[in-house]
Length: 222
Image (tube, rainbow, N blue to C red; front, side, top):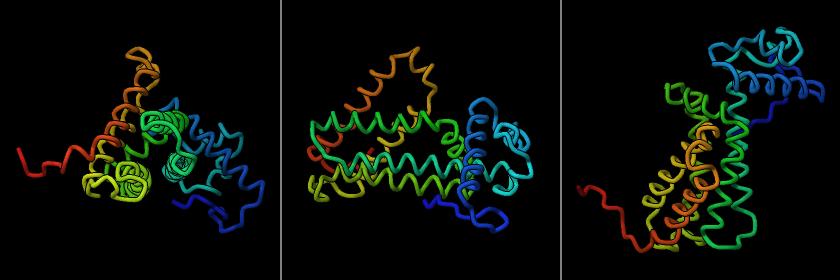
């Protein structure tokens, strides 16, 4: 998931000013995506929001789809980075406390990039190969952390097979992402964010601590 860009569409190296202009366009596109449908976005509108020209836009991006892909790349990398940073930090407290940290960090990044990440997933669901590959690359890294937590620090320490760990992690991740994508206003009208985070954390913690006693997943059984 490399997202470092060092040249524009003309092959010219990006200096400090070029990087700043490109980021200004990315930020403008993300702001507009939060209030407009993706089909309503145009290069002209994005350039205007960034206080530059459409000619400048095309120096950095091929079209609107290209800038939305660039945004998706950055957003996905931030999710992965945040989870990896949490995973590598000092591990103290109970499984539920660690799980609460995970849910909180995940939701924080998703809250920052919700509209971009929802767009990435929508394009992936529509079978766009570029967005699908981007999504899968992010998922593999995100799931890897959950698999490691379920397996135990030394790998397979719990006695749960890798396949079962991956399946359990996939279900947990799907729940994390689906709930993180929901508009916070809707969540507040329901049970509230604090209770929802606590519920997610408890379920994750239970899988981590109790899955060794559950036995193998009953594949093929009714």
